[in-house]
Length: 260
Ligand SMILES: Nc1ncnc2c1ncn2[C@@H]1O[C@H](COP(=O)(O)OP(=O)(O)OP(=O)(O)O)[C@@H](O)[C@H]1O
Image (cartoon, rainbow, N blue to C red; front, side):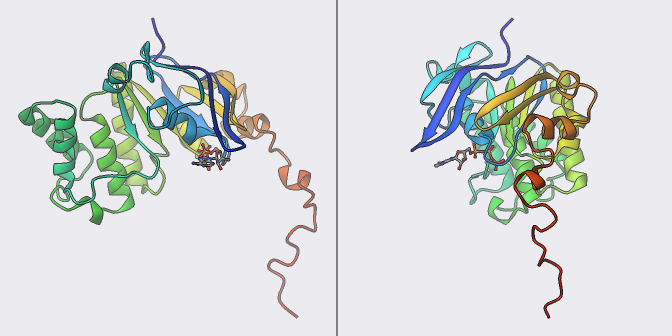
């Protein structure tokens, strides 16, 4: 059985900067996968290439066995995306945004309407459904973005920092929706800096550092008896990073010291 996501030697360079230097990312079908890594590790660049938003300089990507760049229509029919920066159609209302997305995906209007109503209810956006998206708060944007990504019932959902700027109540709602989604055999891949959240939600973790995957597998295999945060710091070589960068006791010694 094909994995939900499989990349081989994925590579991307911006000028002289190698952002992604040969990534072999694997996510099994039905997995709830976390993609973690320090700032600049290459997570967004990797997700952008996997979802067909950014052309790789090298390597292969398969979603459910379909090559994203050789067979983009088949691959894109199977994915839902909540991209970084969440560029949405700002002048549509939340409900219109869902119906429009449904039409672009070829879903009959009455079926799209039924799905939109259910998603709006689950996301607690019924009262805001006729408000323009431009007037939505950060958390509301994440929720309507997730609803739009789910409307066509994709097999694999990619989310770039879906919980960033989301209040705890909305975060629980998002997490519950995603749990139900993976329980039915679909796959979620999301990037996050919040280790506790990844630990709580995910059964599979890929750790990136310096444009490469440095560890990957079932959560317990990656943690190996440590917390995910400890494992992460070990894997990216950031334990004692403060001292290693020559800061010692002296670093920022002026900070908090009253001016004389
Ligand atoms: N369009 C671009 N032009 C030039 N450099 C880029 C571009 N996009 C990304 N990079 C560089 O590629 C590297 C990887 O960036 P990327 O955004 O993929 O990292 P990330 O792991 O998502 O980081 P963060 O956790 O901070 O969001 C960084 O060094 C970044 O500066």
